[in-house]
Amino acid sequence: MSLVPTLALLVAAFINNQYLNALGYSAEQILSKNYKSIRAAQEARKTLEEIRNPLLGQTYHAQSAIPVSREMLRILSANLNVCRENITEPGERELIDKLIESYAIYEPLVKSLQPNLAGINPHDRFSDFLVLTTKMVSFIDDLVAINESAMERAEQDTSLLASQAQRNTAILFGVIITGILVLSYFLSYRIAKPIMTLADQLLTTKEGSGLYPAVESRTNDEIGYLTQSFNRLFNRLKQYDQHRDEIIASEQEKVRRGEEAKGKFIADISHQLKTPMTSLAMSIGMLNSHGEKFASDKCVKLIATAHDDCNRLTALINELVDISRLEAMSQPRPKETLDITVVIKECLAPLMKQAETRGVTIEIEISGNLPHMTIDSFRFPWVITNLVGNALRYTDRGGHIRLKVYRQRSRFYFQCTDTGSGIDPRFLPHIFDRFTQFSERGKGGTIGLGLAIVKDIIEQHGGDIEVESTVGAGTCFTFWIPEHTECQA
Image (cartoon, rainbow, N blue to C red):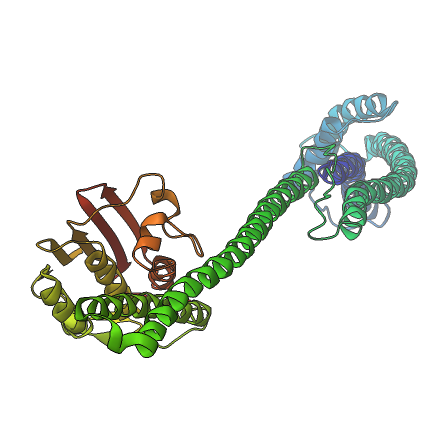
């Protein structure tokens, strides 16, 4: 559609060119044909007079003889030939033929009037010369008159053609301009209409509403492509809203389950606090009231029971401390670049003594030449302590615990393996969930928030953790963090 104005202008230029060619041809007719004939005829007439006048003076005034040059006769003949070669008008050929016939008589007659011809009296033929010259001049005047009339007609035709060309050009350009304006309005409306429709639909669309229009694409041009692009955008927004709603629903469900688990956790921990507290109170009360009456073995037994109850209370209180730690994990902390070998040895020093007391071997295997790691120096050691502490809690005397650290590509890997009692496969999918109790943990005197905190800390370092376990054979926790990490909130 945008080529139509260009084509219209090309048509107008072609028509104007045709008019200019017609005007040029008309002017050529005036200048090249008629004007040449008129000029040649006037030159011939002038030559006739130049030949006649000296001869008249010679005859009537008894002047000495003036010879007529051959050059003048040649000029006269040449001009007559020019007139013969430029015959364009009706009646012109007859006059030219008469002039040529007259010249055939005129040339010998002029030569006979020359005084040097012996035996011939120039006065005998002078009257014939004058009559013939007058006749030729009359023919020439008629020839000039015919060509002048033709020039006048050609000039009128040229003026008429120019006026017609001017009028037709004005009409043509008026039609073209009107057509271009109409076409421009049509194209503008055609372009603006779908854009305005699209804009109206966009104004009525609210982000996050989940209701996005499907704009109809009626063309295959740029507007259609723009409409299709908006439709693709709306589809992506709709998918994004659906995905967002699913995430929100999932998070809400997770929060709901967490709240339920937290409530159950508080009820359970209250119950588990009550049991050792009651037992401890009874043991101490009996020792306080009747201790001197009990046998020594019974006193030892009551003291051992009180000691176990104190250990259970300590473990339960540590779980309550873990709750506060879990809440604090949402706050970002600065990172530090440290030697991981030094960090591991420092945080495992207390556990090494406990393992020695319980008869469990702890082996630390760290690859050589490990670069320093960028970690949260407050949170990350707690991961190592918790994993090795759990392994120590569930590994019997004579067991073995190994902590292996190595680097693979751009990741640091940590692997904690023990030969303990293992974890029931039913509990493995939920082992990192918060406020989730397992019977094995209850037997160990714990509720179980440590692994949830471990997973949070590792994810804050940009890594991940997984577990493999076989009941009666042991458990293996493996986690990794990237070499260049930014601790996340």
